[in-house]
Picture 1 (tube, rainbow, N blue to C red):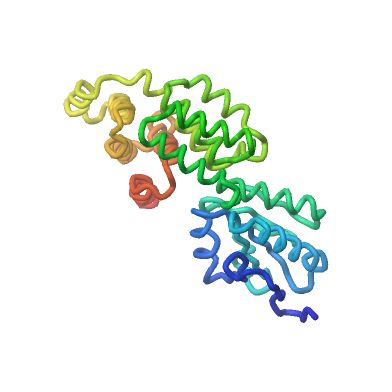
Picture 2: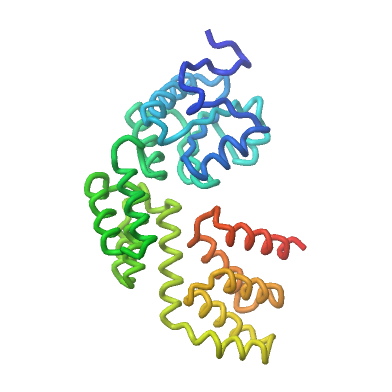
Length: 305
């Protein structure tokens, strides 16, 4: 019997489903979701619907075979977390991916809806690991890294033929078209993304990459812009153009440095264009990229100085 104030009992695998406290939330949810989607179930011992929803979630997460994890948060014991995430009623369920909540629902739902939610969340990380598709996506990513964009696009497309909402393959296909210079096709894919993955980190990253790719088509010569900036350090437009040229030339870190310098000199210039461009670059890169981590730290130190 479930006793008041005690954690729900579960026979689910402890490596997939954990009770999370305020002291472990960062590691078990935010950091863990950088590599594997994490479903967070906000519940309380006195909540009737929670007693039905919790086991349904556990069953669906277990069936996903590692493609998604689950964290259970007792709101009575962890009121600070509930307040920070503005939990107004329970049960409330959030899906975390790459450090932030990207999907969720409130209240009791049917078992079919629970299963669909878990499937949709698992797709954020590429889906189940034993269906062969994850390996195909990995192979396609290697092709793309090696400059074999045509082969990569074909492989990503083949995966999507089997699983149309495979978010890793969808984002990869967009990036393959970008690598081939097919910007219009990439834009069509972004606009036609299935609703379940349209707001995913992969699609948003591809969207940012498309913005930067279009800017690159109008980029000026790096050497001339560098000389102009050295001659007139307070010419903000030229410094902004230099950053765009550096980015188009593959010198991402140098571009970030120029934009941070511009932000330091005049953060409000052109409606905060430097900060907007920095966020676009950060979104286009992987969250764990050293350029992103260093750039975000430096920008934050300037904002809150």
